[in-house]
Image (cartoon, rainbow, N blue to C red; front, side, top):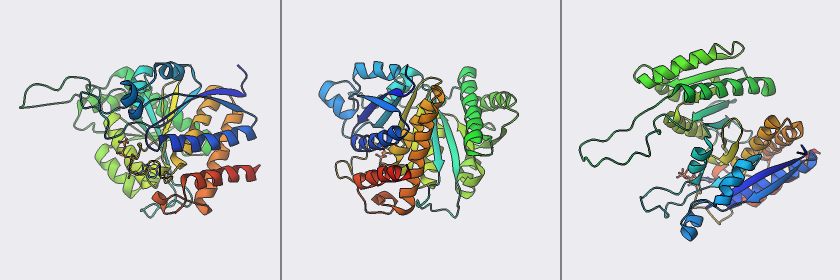
Length: 361
Ligand code: ATP
C-alpha cells in the first residue's frame, strides 16, 4: 500500500464522543496534510444510543472494519440511562478489547504547559500501562452466585498474559528513551507480599527485565506506589500493573496531570490500536459545546505515532509531534475549556490548535 494513505475507523459513540472525535479529525487532517499524508476515514455507529435503536451495541460491519484498519479513534461509549436487560452497561469498547485481544492500555500522563496540577511539581512524564484481559477482571463473565452468604472474584495471572504485558512495558520504555530522552525505566506495581498471583507476576517481570539490560526496573507495592503517584510523581517513567490496579492508578495519574479532559489513551495488541480519551461520554455537558477536545486530539497524536511505528511512516510521527507542539502552545497561552480553568468552547480550542499548526509551517 502507498505509505502516504492510511485507513482510520472512527467510532464517535455517545454524549460528547462525536464532538471530540470531530475536533480530533480536524486537527489530524491539518497535521497530516502538512506532512503529505492522507487519512481515509470510515465512521461506524456504536454505543448506547445505537443500542436503543437497534438492540446491538456496535454495527457488525464496524467490528470487521476495525480489524482491517490501520488504527481506530473512539470517542466515548455508554449512557447511564441505557442498560442491557441484565443491567450491564453498553460498552462496545470492552467488546472490541475482547474480540481483538487488545491486552494493554497505554495511558501517557504528561504535565502539559498551562495545565494546573494541584501538586507542587514541574515535570511529570509517565506512561501507565494497564493489563486489559486478565487480572481481577478475568472472571467477570461468571454468573452471580445464587447464594446470599458469600461472593468472590478471582485474580488470574497467566504466564503468557504477564509476559506480553511486561514485554510491551520494556519496549515502550526503550521507545520513549530513544524518542524523548526519558530515563528508560519500568516500575511494576503489585501486591506480591499478599497475593500469590502477584508474586507470580513479579517473578515473570524479573525474567523479562533481565532481557532488557539497557532499561532500569523496580517493583513497588501498589499501596506505596499509589501514595508516591501523589508525593513523588516525577520519579516515574513507565509504570506497569494488572487490570484493576491499572484501572485505578491510571485515573490517579490522569488527575495528577490535570484531569480527564487532557488524558489520552490507546488499547493495543501487537498489531491493532484503538485510541480514545480516558474520559466517558459526559452526558452532563453533551451538546453544550463545553467538552475539552484535548484528550481526544492527543489520542489522535498517539494514533499517528502508532501508524508511524507499525508502518514505518516517519511522516506520521512528524504529524503527531506537530499536534503535540500545537496543543502545548494553545494550552500555554490560548483558549481553554472550563474543566481546566478557561471559558472557551470545544470549537474555539480546536480552531486555535489548527491555527497553531498552520502558523508553525
Ligand atoms: P465512564 O464511566 O464512562 O468513564 P465517568 O462516569 O467516569 O464515565 P465521565 O463521562 O468521564 O464520567 O465524566 C466525569 C466528569 O468529568 C463529568 O462531570 C464530565 O462532565 C467531566 N468530563 C469528562 N470528560 C470531559 C471533557 N472532555 N471535557 C470537560 N469535562 C469532561
